[in-house]
Length: 367
Image (cartoon, rainbow, N blue to C red):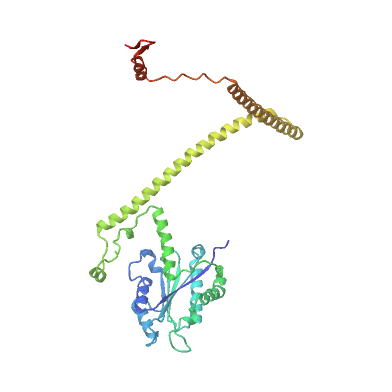
């Protein structure tokens, strides 16, 4: 399966503050953890060279009147599959991004493309462009003209792959697939997450890891002034990450030990089976194919004969048990009933009878 895809993602920005926030990342005017500062000078910008210049171009191109919910700017990200992009030389990358820039201007209008930047200080080189979606027919903001629904975006990606990607050995992703199309922000998050996983897998701690990170504000003062980690907070964060890595390493070690024990048992069982098989191999060594077939047939007949004998023995044993059971039942029926045991009267009743007066014939009662 091919893994050389042309990638195009868009992010709709509906406010100037959103454009400004994105531009600060684009021009590296804020801390960018996923970027390598030593390679930032390799980034190139066509048009505005900083945030202020981009915002000036944005305000100049944006119509004075527009709906409050209108898309004021579109951030476009263009790149390729990491394996394909990193395999290209610097010249091949420049040619790809150059043709992509020409395609953007032809598709959205050269005046609408207010800034283009190429980032080479992150995991995968990519192009980031800012487009103010002004409809030339009406002079108003109209992002739906180009991005009106999933079908329009799909057609945009297809056109880009055909007009640009194919000329650089790239193809379009599967059209109509159920895979979700990530936005620019999500694409950054996925790429940076993979880079972070690889970084921590290597067990390295860089200078950026030791820098205090911005924390989530908990009150108005912190929201206004910002809040960053203390040195103790940095140490605690790295300690937690390290503890998680140690725990993971212990789990892997336990699994490895369990697998080693199971493997040892399998080896012993295999060795025992091999010894048994070796004994039989010695017996049949030198026999031809026909003789081996006769031997196998005779062995099958012998197994069937033994199995039949076992079945007959079980049947005989079952019949013998049934015969013994019947004989015991017959003997129990032939035995006479036991004599009844005389009833024994209570001792007090016997004493009372002995105490009664005796009567002589013709003489009356006597004691």
